[in-house]
Each structure stands twice: as structure tokens, then as C-alpha cells.
Length: 310
Image (cartoon, rainbow, N blue to C red; front, top):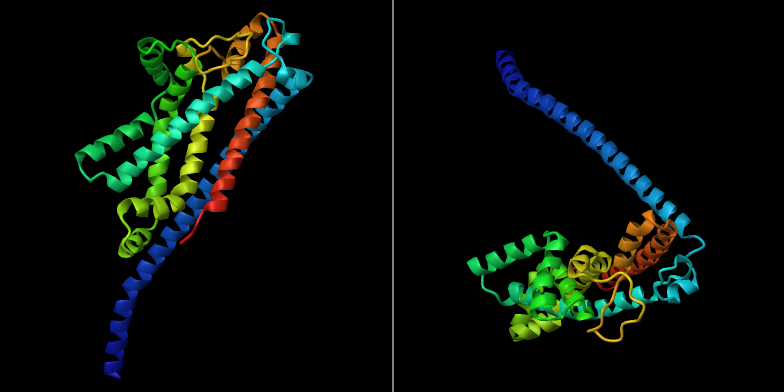
């Protein structure tokens, strides 16, 4: 009996700290659950408020564009008279600028990412380049406009041409494309590279036929999102001195041009003098939003269709 009592006391002495620890853990878990629920409600309210503001803005813009957004508006030239004004020249200027931004950004961005991730040796130089790329991705767009004004517009004598605007916008989105392409390359499983090398393939064959096909969806997604930003930017083009009213349609990359964001910006400023310009700006915003929505939809489609899971 005495042995049983001693054994029972020892078990109680051992189980007492465990019970206390279990109660403490239970209270800590309960606090974490309550905190998680509280933060979840805050995030839900934040999302709801954001969506309400977005819906309000969209409804207001669409309402102001009713009666102004028609085929004549899309195919007409710019005019000082609001009822005769169109955005065909701005649309063509945006298209021509994108014909420069897309190849320059994609070729330079993807090539830089491939070199940094597949060929560059780890060291201070690589770390220095990566840090500066990350910093450039967050630099305000007006800084790139000043760079484009100094280098392309004045030093190279391109003025306010489509080529100058396209190269400036390429500089703006290039860091974003490089960083996105680097992340896509890092996401490629290492055993794919090892299997390719094990079969006797050299580095370029491994990169071009194994790594790139797997990383391409992520690269294209980041690239299209970067180009979408370039379409909607205004500050760099304002710094370059892109004019707002051009009657002729640009025919080459050396012609002067204007874009939809520039036209929206100046029409909004002129609303004080001519209230009808607010309707023209709203109609142009709707067109620009449709273009951006289509590009983002393409990015999502590419990612979902070609993404491979391992």
C-alpha cells in the first residue's frame, strides 16, 4: 500500500506541471484564435470599403461617359471642340509606343534575369546589381521621365518622339520585368536542371529547353503587368514634353505623339474652362480600363494555361 501511495504521489507531482502547461497553452491558443478572428474582420471591412470606393468611381466614370463614348469618338481626331473630339490619334500613339516598349523590355529584361540567375557567379557584384534592381523598381516614375528627358530627348536629340517615349517607358518597367523574371527562374525546381545536366546537356541547352519553358508563364505574367503599368503612366511623358493636342496621326517612330493617359490628364485640367472635357476624359478612362482589363486577363490566362506543377 505504501508503495502504491508513493507511486501515486510521484505521478501527481509529474502530472501537475503538465496540467499547468496544458492550461497555459490552451489560454494562449484561445487568445491567438480571438486575435485571428479580430484581424480577419478588420481585413474583411478594409476589402469591403476598398471595393465600395472602386465601385463608386467606376459608376461615376461610366455615367459621365454615357453619350460620349461611341464609334465616332474612337475613330475621330483630336479637336478643340468637345463635341467633335476623338481619341484615334491618342490610341495610335499608345499602340506605337507599346511596339517599342514590348520588344525592348522583354528582350533586355529576360536576358538580364537569365544572366543573373543562371550564369553570374555569387558575389558582391551580383548582390549589388540585385539590390539596385530592387531599388529601381520602387523609384517614382517621374525620375525616369527626367532620365529620359536628359538622355533620349536632349542628348540623343530625339525630342518628344515616339522612340523617346518608348525608350523612357522601357526604362520604367525594365526593373519590374527583371525582378519578376528572376523570381520565375528561382521557382523552377532544381531537380530539372540536375536531370538535364545528368543527361549530358550543356548550360545553354538546359536553360533554353528545360528552365525557360517552365519559367515562361511567370515571366510573361510579370511582363504583361509591367507593360500595363507603362500604358497607364503619365508623369514620364509629361516631363518629356509630350503635347496634348495633335491633329495628325503619327506615321513613324520619329513623329510627335500623344497617349490616352496624357489626353485624360490634360482634359481633366481643362475641365475648369470647358465642363464637357470631363465627359471626354471619362470616356477615355473607360477605353483605357478596358485595355488594361484585357491585358491583365491575358496574363492570368497565360499563367493558368501554361503553369506546370511539380
